[in-house]
Image 1 (cartoon, each protein chain N blue to C red):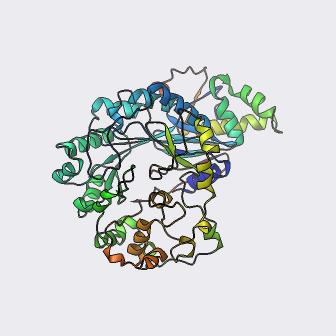
Image 2: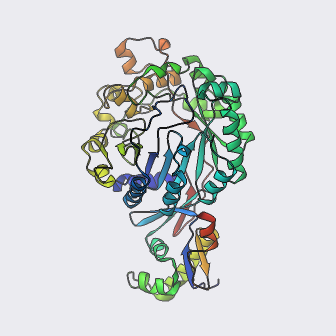
Image 3: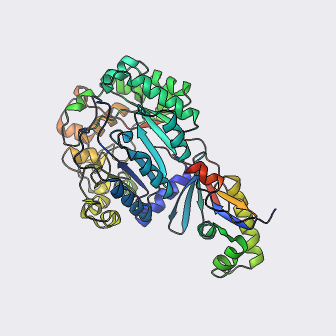
Length: 106
Length: 385
């Protein structure tokens, strides 16, 4: 598993918070996902410029009783899974809003 | 509908969130369909700015599924500006159009904007029948060309086939046409009264023999025995059941900002030009009344043998004069489906065979089987209305 530093929400999606969960639909194939509370925290914080380890430290470990190592490992697995479905973008570099996905969508 | 969609709807209901909204941008149209329930004039449509503000309010209120309809949506010159704003606010956008104004450029733009699906009305596989219904020569060719273009650009397309006397024998061929075009097929036998209450267009409904044929078409309804099975007993659970999503997790907004429980349920609840969308949704006395009604509160239907399985539409009941009363059109559906008359039929002492305004539920193929992902992300399949 490669440790990507930056994560950004794809714009080729539909998404809405529903209570402490988030509904996300891929605009490319209409597959619907729900993210649970922790995954929703990462999703919301995935702005393309905040490193994933910082998101985990500040938004997950600071709020929930979980060790940074375990949290980061779980977060990496989650973002890779979301990226495989095209609803999250991963990069070693900060991701600007003018990403390919953004151009594709808007 | 997938389990995931059902779960999301249940959660939205619990949280009082309007998960799904149909927004009509205009009632203007380039076709003049003989069964249309709208007039085609502009009585003061919302401006671009008003609609964008409404979209912001709806996103903040939790609306996820946004169906943009009309009238013909592309009659609005600002349509793509509105659509772009809707996608920026990450709605799951479904469009309803006749497709006549869709060319290569529009199809490309719709794809680029990430529209979830496009529904196009096709009334017959025969151009002369379709064009006679739309009263627009050449409309069949143009609509079909739009379907081809949209599919070429990778968009999901559904052919919506409204059943009426003029095209009663054509639906199987329209279904085959949809398959040929790699589009989905939706049979909609629901001719609704006009929004001003005029019920004259209901005479376009097909006769009972045609309806029974549709109900017994396994290619449409799946298991015919199950679909047409006699009604089950009305138990306590059924008495507490809610009628449908209208006003519970769904609503409708007209081009003039009027908010209703559903496009087929014209009970005025407020106007977004005067009141915030979320305040209408949460606090309107009319919405609260709609939400309070269960089968138990319906004097006739709660005693009806079809009570637990009827597809009663509260909007049609409202248009018949009482939102707690039966929808006579749905009584007719139950009879056509099962051969057993409802309490309402008995009370009216009428012969079901004589009614001409039969209506049906929308019938469509089941969505593809969903896959379940464990742990932190659950994947399902979107329901397409």
